[in-house]
Every structure is written in C-alpha cells, then in structure tokens.
Image (tube, rainbow, N blue to C red; front, side, top):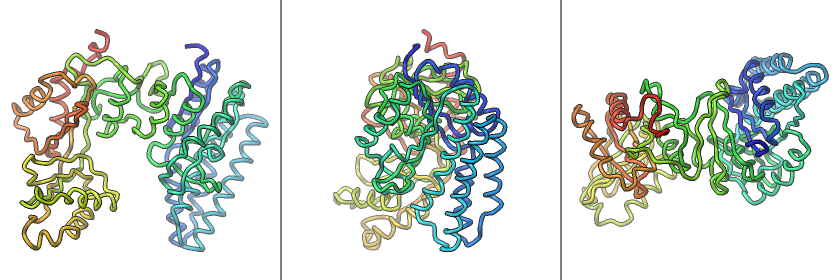
Length: 473
C-alpha cells in the first residue's frame, strides 16, 4: 500500500512517556512515504490532572503543586526526546502554554466558578502541549513536522464538553488547511479532542474524541486508511481479563465494531467512526508497543464467522429498573414520558425489554445512574402509582449485560439455542433478553456473580478461542 495516505492517531499511553514517544517517532519514520497526518491525545493522565486542577481552583485553592508537576513532566520529556534548537523552541512553547494555563486557573480561583466553557478551555492544554513535544521529537529525528491546533479547523456548536461538529465547515477547513502541508512533505501533528465555535471559543468533543478527530481528518483528506495506535493489539473476541484464550480479530465490520463498542468492548465509539464510515475508509486498530502486529481492520464488510458470532462482550455494574402495571398497555404516552425522563437526566439506557402483554418495561442502566433515575421516574408517574394503575417502580441490582455479536448471525438458525442452551446446562439464570431487528447481536442480563462464567461458556460454545483458525479458513 505504498503511497496510500494514512491518518495516524496515537492515544494517551502512546505518548505517555519518553520511551513511548520514541516509539511513535520510529513508527512515523517507518511510514513517512505514505503522506501522513498524525492526531494526538494528551499524555496519559494529563486530562484527568487538568480537570482536577480546575476543580481545586473552583474550590478557591490555587493548584500550584499540580501545575508545577505538569510543567516538570513536559519539560523533562522535551529534554529527553528533542535536541538543540528544537528542544529550546519546544521548552519555550510549553512554558508559554503552562503560563497561560496558570492565568486561567488563577481566574477560576478568584471567581470560585467553573463553567463548562472554562472546563473545556482548561482541558484543551493536554493536547496542545502534546503536539509541541511530539512534533519537536519528530523534527529532531529529521522528520518534517508541524504542530497543528485543531481549534482552527474543527468547528462546533456551543455544547461545551460534548460539542457537535459542523461537518461541512470542518471538512472544508481541514481539506484546505492540511492537504497543502501533506503535499509539501510535511507531517501535520494535530491536537485531537478539540474544536471551537464560530466565535473561536474552545470546545471539546466528548468521549473518544481524538479518534473522532482522526476520522474527521481522514474523511477530509480522503485517506486510504486511518490507523488508531493504542495499547492493545486490536478488537478481541472477549475481554482477555475474563477469557484467557480471547484473541484479536483480524477484521470486523463498522456495524460489528459499533455493537461491540456499545456493549463494553475496547473498540471505537460509533460516533467517532462516522466520517470514515461515510467514505468507507478502513480503520485499523494497532498496538504502538507491538507494531509488528497487523491489528484489527474495521471496514464496510467482512467475512462472517462459521457459527455467525465473532465476539462476546459485556458490561457489569448495572441495575434493572422495572416499570409495571395494568395501565401500560392502555396508555400510549407512557414510553414517551419514560424516555423523556431518562433523557432529561442524561441516563444512558444500556438495554430495553418489554413483555408482549405490555404489562412491564425494563430498563438496564449503570448502577451510578440508578438512584437518581428511579427517583425521577417515581416523580413522573406519582399519580399513576397513587391510583394503583402502576405498581411501585422497582430496581434489581448487581447485574451485568452480555452481548453476543456478529454480522453472520442474521439468517443463521440456532444462535439463541446455542447461547441459552449452554447457560441452562450450567444453571445460569437469564433475567432479561433483547435482540434488535438487525440481528447483529443478542443481549441478555445475568446476575453479576455469573458474568465471568457466562462469558467464558458462550465464548467457548462458539469456538472463538485459540489461534483464530476460523478467520483463515
């Protein structure tokens, strides 16, 4: 694939230490002939540290020690990865940014107020520092690179902390701004996670946002592939902490990746893939620390597994909220009120089931969201509960959801029988079941104490472990 333009994104652990950054420099050097653009996260744990500093400042205390630790970490890293004039310039640029950050934190301390807008501005410094450090390291190694602030190119609305991208304007700006750099043989080193409003106010893009930036850049530049460099070998058939013989999948489809991500697998969030999906650009997940591995390719279509299933994923620490009563089937607005209430609380509903009699609706939610969501639902339906048409809203705790995922499940008979048969044989109780019309997954809820055994049994029953023979058949 020589000559194919590649957009690379390196996550926090990939730029989190001197050794990691040197590895990044080596990887970029090995693929320089492709016409590269590189998107970076902040150094590992820096974004969390910045948010903690903002919270400390909001409480009225200057986060002096934390700020000094941040300064020292970046200065020491620059000194270890850059030389000569590149080192001097990078140290000056980092010092300037940290001084700017110090002034902002001082203002927050005086006001004792932290708005989402201010939180986004503080959070932006991790990526802004990261591109300075890595760009200097690349130039010191003889690679022509230039730090790029994505806030000039990625335009968003004013929904701070989870800003929504103006795709048309962003695509135009990225194309016009970055394509000439790449054509000239320079490597743009771009801040992930960041955008700005039309007025130039800093925003951040939310979960998986550096991956999202890479997808936006890839779409704008019509890249041949997008490579997400991280600290895992790729998407796996199950969580390796649960299943000892879980293995890396060579290929999955965009839809399979979306399902796996939603149900807890370490795969790209569906929203982050959207610009790449629109242009059918393959996305490859690779391990920065084991670059010899090919990783997992996510593309429009892939081969189906012989038994239909490619992965078994899971989310634990869930609660099941049960709304039941005779009036449910006669009250058409119940569902609207139910989901309006969860939406207002920003409760993520992991799974929904409803009996065909319409006597009850079950919502699986994160245990941290459960108390507030239950209270809000009790308030919303207080009249129905008082008159007896709805029973008291109940909660079942200590649960987990398991999802059996695979594009080949559609039209493959016996998936459910194989899944639930093996669990029945081992005495594992299924509390609730859901399957979408796409037939890409079957999701079911079990008690949390049964999660590990459930995933292991289902994974084994579909022959997903071992050396990955089915992908080479």
